Length: 210
Picture 1 (tube, one colour):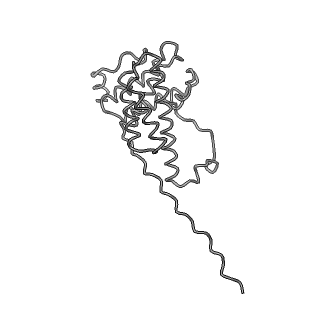
Picture 2: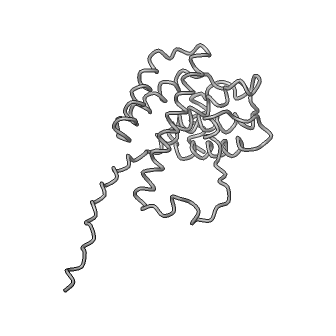
Picture 3: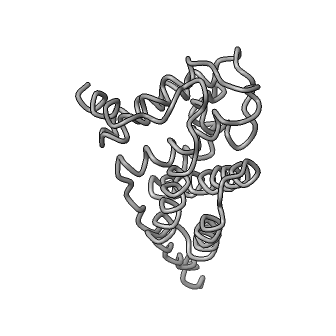
């Protein structure tokens, strides 16, 4: 007489993915604004980038200073589209991340993320974005140090952020250290030459009224 049917092994419950740390509009704008300024200060522009590039950045700076973070992000979107145009010098890595992404045509079922649970998919994207932020911050720090900007107090903040994301993961502390780095660097960077001086209070107020 045959025995009872074999029971399938019990599945080990999957560990829940950590909750994503929400981003405010200000944080989103800041994390793009500062590396975009460094990108337009790179030596590839042979002195000064075109006003077609510095114009959107200058407006983004003015909107950001006025507390209008949605329009600041909109101007950064314009800049990212223009940086993709082939008429400009090619940005080095990791500054190419600032360009609008143009993915190759791919049916949805070819994308390995397509079959992932939504929580895992979002967690992977958040992790990738954090790694890209660390890469941009690292190169922005290196550029600043090579161009006479005092980075002595910035390096520890970035180093702590790197250790935090590698050992603990995407926690509020990681983003606090990252944003502290971006804020401090933002205050020390010059504005690209062809864009003129940093937006004044008057320019910021005008942007805020737009």
